[in-house]
Length: 270
Image (cartoon, rainbow, N blue to C red; front, side, top):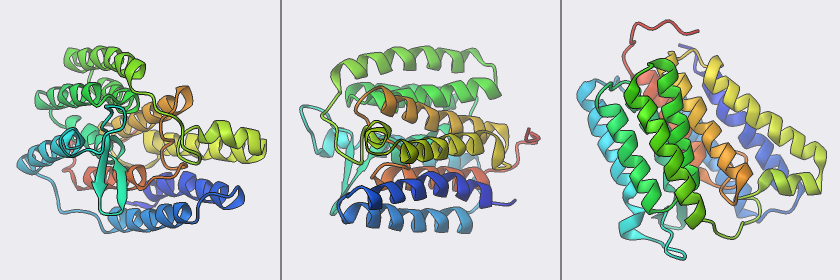
């Protein structure tokens, strides 16, 4: 299967974000980190992973849930908000790193998948993290589009109310080039803001319709990215791919690599 469209879905907004950072005075480390993350993401997507069987899917889902919840134990915590993984000199947004892959795996588990998403929504509520809760809601919407199951519909409802609750408790001041990227870019240069917006729209559309993966992978992936983007537009939450932060770049690359490694569900892409 051709993996180039999946790589383009990651590269287009990331490169647009790098251009924005270079033109408008981001700290030197920001484009270096995002550029290195894009190189790593390309290796993850192009080299791929071994085929995921049923046992591997369930172990991976459990590990992703643990990783998502880990900040509640390890910190760091800011104003009683804990949603970041400390990895040496880097701090990664736990939701952006884990939720895309978790949504892909949940779509392949009719019974355990919705339960895994509910568990993740509870973690997002406790952190609290509106962006992660909304991305999980988007992933559940994608799951419902693939399989019109009442369980997926229930997850959508729970995720929506959890996202509202997290939004009321979890807002922090915006960091330039991380949060409010499209708002700040509009003030700096409407042309650059349009470029960033179009690149992010292209990424969502590629993930939803253009990667050649089955619908069971494309829809949860594209809708989880859409959820992160909506949260970033509504309030002070990181802008995935185009904003500073390696977590989304690596997280969506890992999710695509897992999707390519899953056995064919005998579902024709549309």
